Image (tube, rainbow, N blue to C red):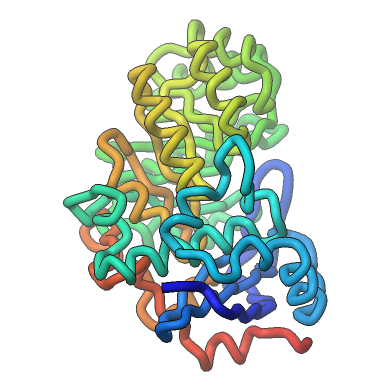
Length: 358
């Protein structure tokens, strides 16, 4: 199996609801879909999100990829190429345009060549992964927020993540009260501040939540990503709530974070190879991982292959409209597709609907 051709689609997908946090708000996805085609008629599909910013026209993307990536891809074996992407020396296709989409399409082809679902190619045996509902609720009113919590409850999820970091702490406390009103006490409550605070502010906020009687399963990204001493301070001060962070750091940043002792759950997502390496490194420190939002929920394959993945994030976002059969959720778990490859087949009608002109 050799890669012989490619096709790129530029998509603009309006969202069902505004999503955002204490720092940003989005109302649409700008997304690139890459198809890699082989000499034996197979197609591997990869995806890349340009959140909050327009992407170049399709014709420009085609030319960018042809001159900054394709020469390293054309004629290659998918499995060998997938293994080389992102390695520390030489052949670093991950640095090229559409590096994430290229790697995803490569692994899709490699698993198809092996006639295996991707999670099994990665060494997994159980396709079920515990998932939590991520409301991305900072810009939702109370009625909309309650509705989304109810949606995730109907899916059987026993974990929920809400956005905090509002300048008025009473807003945060009201959000947490609504979680208990709708979901009751028997649920893992995660909160995400998206780097809104200083270390001292984070300690003060967590004390207020605790004094109000809210049991927090984890606090995600409370301070800026590279404040390693700050994370060590939080780990020593905030008590039982786990610190979940690391998603915005590269591999070396994740290593520094683990060395600092300032993380209880390492947040990973992005390229499969880099995420697997980070998860194995975290295991050396006795730190479990969580899978953040991944395009088309494809992180389920990675999560299903890792020994210590606490949770997979699910926000039920608009990109799933591009799939004929999206990743399935059942009884609070994501189910990795059992079809060869990553299991996502493009819905050509939806692709045509959301694709922008050349």
